[in-house]
Image (tube, rainbow, N blue to C red; front, side, top):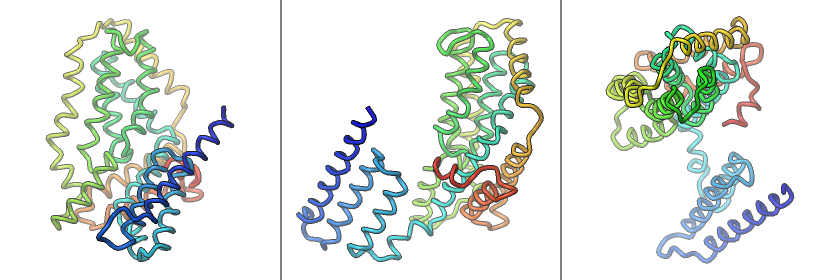
Length: 319
């Protein structure tokens, strides 16, 4: 099967490469310089390879830059993306997200909040969704946050002998977390990578600057929605509860925390970096430190030998 997959990938690469060459040399766009057709061909080739990554996406991007320079695009324009702090912010935040996940501190936060809750379905809903909310400023990806929270949520649901679709709590807990994973992407600037891309376009055309704290204040209506959505979901389904289930939830959280043991050095380091970066995000309006620089600092702290939590090679695979 793997043998055929290689042939399929090679065929796909040849087809889109031939298509790109036809666009470049047949020049379907008339009335413009030849470079217009060249850049269109490069753009389509790169995008199609990103959609179906036959080769690593970052390699595709560098090839696109190299060919662009060969066909006449200026070096300043070709490398302009590397001086945009938006993209460095995204990269830096991904390094920190990997560090938070790899250290285990994210899971510990979720289990701790469940442990200190009453054990009721509503308290489980609130503790799990607020774990996702707490992580959203540094994990700017729905998929990453969902993947991180799914085992935590499933563990709690299993502990009460429930399933994702039943009315014993599974439906309510999973649905609330699924919805909040989308809603909480907007209450903080760094809750989703596309927030930063949209902000960059906004600032370019309006010449207005919005700090991390400004966004947080403007996002108060969304924060209200983040708070009330899990509660609404709970009252929509009103799952069947029992005192026995509350005990099971507490026991599950305590047992899992025992398995994790005391806070490790990696967890303490990840938590310290998390809090430090969050403080810098909040105070950027006064410190005037660009958000891109803060993200780069987070990346450095995450991979710095003797201090960092992860290897650079491991983080770049995720990015």
